[in-house]
Structures are given as C-alpha cells and as structure tokens.
Image (cartoon, rainbow, N blue to C red):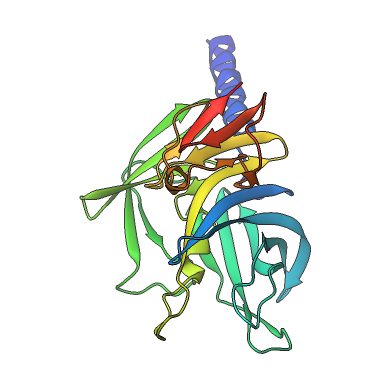
Length: 260
C-alpha cells in the first residue's frame, strides 16, 4: 500500500513539475510585438515594441520595453524611445508606462499595473487596466475557458457576458503591451490620428502568433485578416513593407499569411 501511495505521489510531483516547465514566460529578452500604424491620411508605417535591457525603478528590477518606428509620434518624442518597463512574477505580468514630461526628455513612470495573469482559473475575474488605476471604467474580463493549440495555452474571456477577448500565454491579447492606449485622439483641428494594428509577436525567428484585424489570435500558418489588405502591399511578419514578394519564407500579402 505504501509503495502504491509513493508511486502516486511521485507521479503527481512529476506532473506538477512538467506543468511548471511547460509554462511559456511572457517577459523574455528580444520578444517583439509588431504593429502597422495607420493615419487618418491613409498612410501606414511599421512600428514595434521590443523587450530590451534592464533597469531599476523604486528598487524594483524591470526589463525595458523599447519603441521603434519610422516616424515621430510628437515633436517631443523621437521615433525610437523607452516606452515602458515590465516584469513577471508567478505568471503575473506587471507594467509601467514611461512618460516624457518635457522637451528635455525627463522621464516619469506611471503606476505599476497588473496587465496579465496567466495563473487564472476558469470563472476568475480579471480587471484590465494598463495605467494601474482601477476604477468603475476599467474593463472586467471573466475567464470562460482555456484551450491549447500549437503548444500554447489560449485564454477565452467574456466581457459583461457579451463580447469576448483572447489571450495567448507568453504573448498577451489584442492590446498586447497597450500601444493603442498611448494614441489618444487629439482634439485639435486637422491633427493626425494614429490607428495601431497589432500584426504579430515574435521571438527571434520564431513567430509566436499573429492577430487578425479584429484582434483575434491566429496560430500557425493561417489566414490573417488585417487592415493590410486595403493597401495591397507585401509585408514581412514584423510589419515591414517589402519591395518585392519573397520567393521563399513566410510573409503577408492581401491580408493573408503566405508560406513558401
């Protein structure tokens, strides 16, 4: 009897260790969220957020998130700058925006926000807020189910029992690292409006997943419906416009992911 009990305990421990090892970390050096940013003038340009380097704020260690693009956001911001800081602990992802408060690029971090929790159980409620200020306007997500595809766990949420939201373990959801949150609509006349569209998340040469125009997750070589199909250009998986259609590899054309 003791021998059987020992075997059961050993198998349970092995299963537990396997489950822990199977978890895909969110915060990893070099992980990149790739965007195409459209303007109200129908122009488009690629941008990306990259986890790159380390820093310490208020005695807490973070990884830096850098923003890279081909254009300037505002007169005060250069096209390449420190966008945010991020850390991960116990399958929870914590995040702080970095504000540029004057033309001399003085930095000021926002409140720390819990933006992802991949340890949630079905039925749990998660309050989504990228600024660390939870209030009555914050979005409440209820975890309805967890699935697995291509070795990655997918979390499916309901919002007020109506619309839905998806997360991918190690990648996040349609808001990714909140780039859309940093593009408030200006109130002045004839200002340029920016519309970021998340295209994919990559780590080195590995494409972790892509997103369609509605922010739904696309795993594997599947159709990707994004706003790219409006301009008929060819893009790589990092959202960069290509001059010619590649003869081999994976790329996006007419809103579809094509593999050769």
